[in-house]
Length: 174
Image 1 (cartoon, helix red, strand yellow):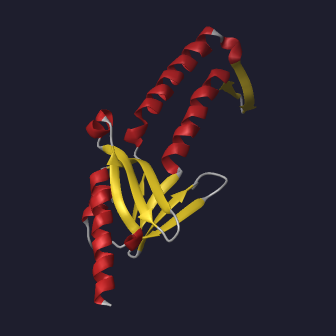
Image 2 (tube, one colour):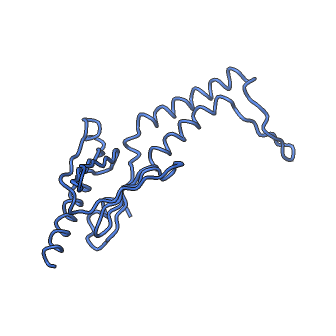
Image 3 (cartoon, one colour):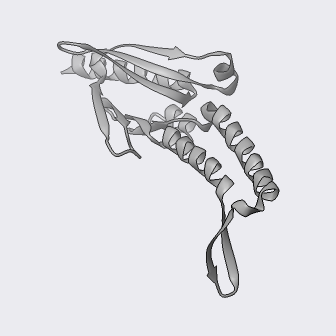
């Protein structure tokens, strides 16, 4: 189910928002450029091909120039998969470090949220992505949770405000 469908469906209690690949277009273009350069470099300098192993008469080579696009692919995967915003019925959970050595989770009750801001430049507006900032008022300190590269940030903002209102009405009913 796509995020837009999940955000518009009021029967779903838990919604997970991840980074969008559209926000990573410069990095994707860099990967394409590095792949082209690594192919050119491998043909121009064939001595950079290293024999990895031979199986049944087939030799598998490791192109040394191919390591650069692989490293940038790892950076791309880390950027896209490392953070997520999870909407539970009673609270919002921001998880950072999902594919890292360390993981950090921040739980925010909807009644603690003070404001939600969206930050977009012109390219982000054209692609439909943006940065969502959630400002909270805790007991001693104010906290800001930032989720960059979110697809359809207006829908995410509307969903947060919808859940804030639901939390307020549930609290008033008690």
